[in-house]
Image (cartoon, rainbow, N blue to C red):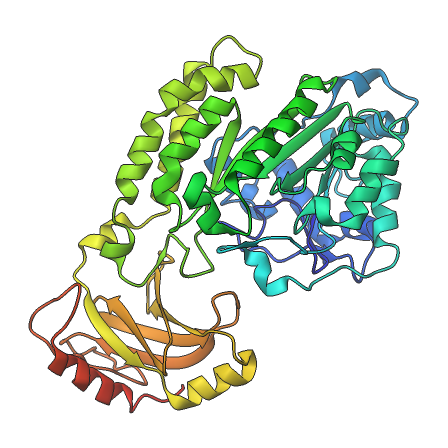
Length: 485
């Protein structure tokens, strides 16, 4: 169960992402974890899984399946013969109930990722948590419930913000009695900027741990994305964490790095693979495909300009895998990485490539200036105050998730658009709610059914980078007549 700082709960981290648009299964601000665990949404999911029906379960577009990830029940097999600890007994009960296709379980959850707060010590250009930085779970007994369930868990994932900054996880590392659950895999995703001796001492108490370091590039690319962090310091801290993992009793203890791939760092992909090779680390990638628009791989101001070099960077990173596989084998304590597994890793880059609409760069675009309707600007300023505003522009009728955007300055934004009809809204780069500003039309051809608000940009020649000044002035005059829908 994944619990974020708004209290919303989901069965996994892909439940509401990467085209899986499922609603939360509950909220710990209103319910206990165990009420959610056996609530209607979880029962429906289990029924679908028992029938082998991913669509009914809500997992038809599972990004983990697309990436070829192993989704089996993974736990410490030393617990198989353990009937003394809550963990051992819980594993036995869960196996029996899953085998029977039960939808209401006596067994407790086995994995909990708990994010009580989004407090963080750095600011990242792409971080979805910026819009909820002050969100916090304040239900008095929520943290107590996590600690009560810890003896049953296979894995507890300490979430943030920055987990090692949060008091709850500092206390847990210092005080959890590992005798109550010697099998617990303590997991976390950290920016590795606060790796203190108390943190290292607390981690050494666990038999098993799974540490992911968010590393969105190397050198200057990293520091451009992770504002306030220093790459050399983080690299040194990664090496400290590697030593703790290496000394852990379980051979499954591991540390890896993950990169959120976005506009600001995609050209650095080959360097990340080389870094993982040289530091002997497993790596992963997650494409940024929704917000913020200035980092999304599917939202553009000028597609040809924005995507320049991306395909070459993906190809170059993929080519580095041959030199990386010996390091990956060392991480896995194996002699070699099997060829089938190598193909899975190469496929990760094809999954990334598939998220990017490269063909859009070949579609003629016109550079236009949009005058944002006054009424829409008034509503946006009322909602967001002095925060910088951006225009979100969506092609009507499109189903591929591609969109456009532009920063708004003095009530205007510049953007390159193809012919077509578009809807426009205004918000901040972080806000999920985009105010509706109606529709407009780009191009010489009239629509069979004219939209409620239409803009005609009449020009006989496509100009991907710029349009004639006269066309621009006419476009601005016509946009002055656009009002909020």
